Image (cartoon, rainbow, N blue to C red):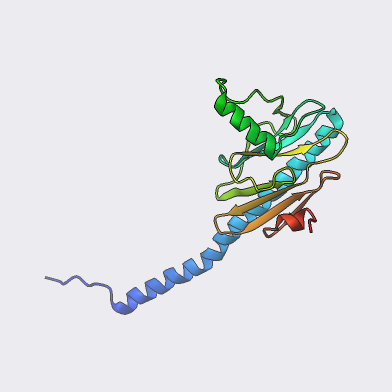
Length: 199
């Protein structure tokens, strides 16, 4: 009867070394994939923001980019030529009113999806998410629920700071300028003071 031959310790070490070498070369590629995905997301969002700005000026209606921080989605909505913007105080007042009233939920929004800019809700790629949204209307960053960037028919935008991150802890910041709807992208998380030139 012939005995079965097993692997020697040297053969096992060679196999483990090869697997380690393959893993070491693949890890930077995986990390680069997430960073590439984050950068392409920022580019696509900047294009959508510019289209929302242009559409507001052309149509004469207020537009807004909606950021859904829970579902990791964004889209553009259009409203009437004049719209009252929500502030932290009005949000708190509406929340108290909803709790004490018998009505179900808030009143319907005058804003509807602007299908000429975003045909449907845009999903962030897997592994990319909104960290928070900062606007001048709110003292604190918005890190849950819905947040908005508004664009007005006369060419003014709501200054907004969008923080994105990925699973590899890469951070990107999009800063929407109040003039011309311009969006600057930074490959780091920048603070509100720097983005809004606050001293």
